[in-house]
Amino acid sequence: MKEYENNRSETVVTTQTATLALPQNEMEQLQLLIDSKVLPSNIKTIQQAFAIAQFGKDLGMKPMQAFHQVYSIQGRLALSSKGLGALLWANGVQYKTIQDFEKVDKPDGKTDFVTTVEFYRGKVTDRASFYWSDAVRAGWTTKDNWIKMPKHMLYARALALGAQRIAPDKILGLYTVEEMVDVTPGAAQEVIITEEGDVKIKI
Image (cartoon, rainbow, N blue to C red; front, side, top):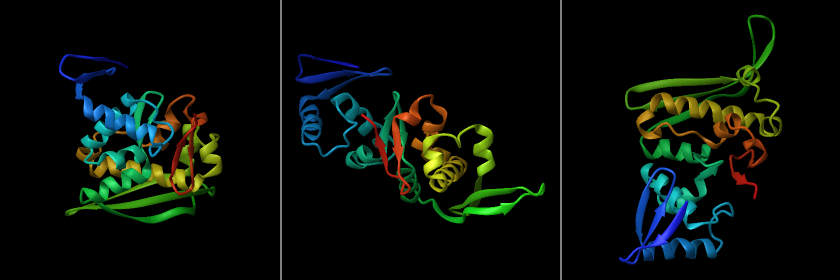
């Protein structure tokens, strides 16, 4: 990204996808937030703050909500599972956990664990389940977050799966932080996720 001044007291911010002219006062406000240390420590530049605020706006979030729920992981923005849950409720999609890392016996006699979340949107009801064996087959269970927080990671996966099914028009194809960590090489070493779903980017 780069920035330069034009002759209308605006700053032109160039990203990988667009060039946008922002009023100088907005840029100053973003810089003030960064300097005040009220933003997560991973947001270091005006460009990062603007991209996250704009992304959150597209999802119906206020800037300060976006700053604490949207994260940049190797150049791609992703939403925390907490943010995803709030986004669903804000858009009239309700959900509840039916199975929470529940031990189940498989037909072949082996033991598995499953998390199931049920979703409700108007007259539509849907369920999404994610099994520990699904994560094993994908090769995720050797990653640090899966080792330390298997219950949360399974829940986050079930929540994201169901959200994409029942509210694709609200989710807009975005990934959760947990999904990005699983599928992006090297991301597991950069992102810390707590059992409560809080996210910290290593800097």
